[in-house]
Structure formats: C-alpha cells, structure tokens
Image (cartoon, rainbow, N blue to C red):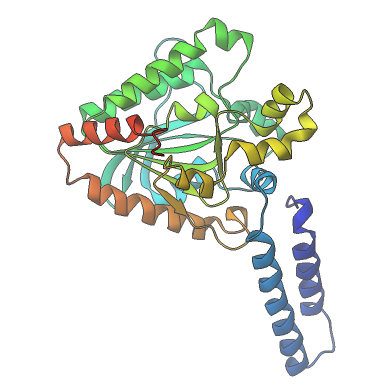
Length: 317
C-alpha cells in the first residue's frame, strides 16, 4: 500500500473519486469523459498548488518518502551492464552502500550510492541506508579503482547519516569518512553527485565531493537532521519544523548558498509518484555535466573540485 503524507490527503481524495468514477457502470462515454476530464484538471491544480508551497518540514517528509526512487532504481533506469562490487577487503560487505561498474550510454562509469529498503526486512538488511566504516572503505577502494582505470564517478546520496553505533565508532567511523573526503579530493576523473533524497551530515558528504552537484527538487541536505537539531537547540524534537527552516536544507536554499550547482526538477507530486520520469531528469543532468567535465584535463578536474569546495562558505558583504 502506498504511503500517503498528511498534506497529500486532498490529492488522494480526488484520485479516489477518479478511480470510483472510472469504475462506475451505466455511464455513457460522453458523461464519463466530461466528469473525468473535470476531475483530472482539478487534480492537476490541487497537486501543483500543494507541491509549489511545501514548507521545509514538508520537504523533509517528501525526501524521506519510502516510495522515493533509491540508488538501485536509478541504476536500473539510467545505466546498463551494472556489475556490483562488494567488500572493503578489511572487514565485511556493507549493503547500505551500493557500488559497481556500469555503462552510461555505452561509456564505462563507476556508480556509488546509498541504498535504503522498501520494507522492514530490507531496511534491516540495508541498515536504513546508514553506512558503517567498512562501507566507506569500500567506496574508497572503488574511487581509487575508477581513478586508475579513468572511469567517471557518479554518486547518489540518500542517507539519514553515517551509522552512529558503538561498533561503527570502534571501527573508526570518523576516520573512514575523513579518508573518503581525502580520496575524493584527489581524484583526477570527473565526479558527479546527485542528492536524491536525504543528505544527512558527514554520512552524505563522504560520497558527495563531486565536481558538479545536482539536487532533486524535494530533497534535503544538511549538517544534522531537523529532529537532532531541535533536540540540541530546544531540548525538544517537536521543534523539528522550526529547525528545518533554520537549517536552510532545501534545494532552493542550497542553490542560493552555492552549495549545489543545479536543482533537478521532479515530476509534479514528487519523485515517488514517477520513477522513470525522475530518472530521465537525473540522467539529463549527469550526461550534460559529464560532457563538460570530459573536456578538462586530469589536473583541471582536480583544481575544479578543489576550488569548488574552497569557495563554499565565502561571502562578500
């Protein structure tokens, strides 16, 4: 059963009316077509009105929607010949991070992205998209492999954050994230990052140092979750809505702050309503920017990434 967000109730109500009307017996085609057309117009207007006025907290809810496309969905819709690669060669495989070689319109690339589950069993297996140190060490291994074989790197970010468990800390979570940043910073191949859902703290940044960063319209990207921020600042997680506004975590905020390069438009009603259309938009972003980056030398790619991140947070009064 599809998950319905609170503010989507008017949309679902009209959709239910449409389904009921389409299944009614005894209506002639002219009556049916007229009524259906009227309801479809109303549905489009209501959906557009709701989704053009989402608050930051509502965008958080959309970014976390369980029907939203995940990395494996993008791989299926954008790439061909995907071969998943496993393990960090030190401890174990981490299913929260999917990594592998693929082809983008015939060109070999390396794809790396967070992966959540669709149900309780899958989420336990994928650890709700929260990566352990071995996952980041796996990505480091494959970043270096991509650099060695001169394959562009495409990453998909969708995680609440790096896993904060005791075992993860004992195995060096902070060091694993820091080393991932160092490895990405030194890449001499094009790297493109897509913020596809939740971009949570260092767990997101650990695979997000792209030369070009695109962000889906209703995704979020922040140093901490709104609930965590509210718990620290107001000692009450119920202030999450207020925290979401203060964090400037929406795609519009981050584009204005020059953290991301481009906002990738989602289908009306959110990416969770149309995976293929969302993937087509994401592919267009990747292909366009990859074509530009491929004109640069390895040294220019390194300098481009260096300058991009050095200039973040610099403001002129």
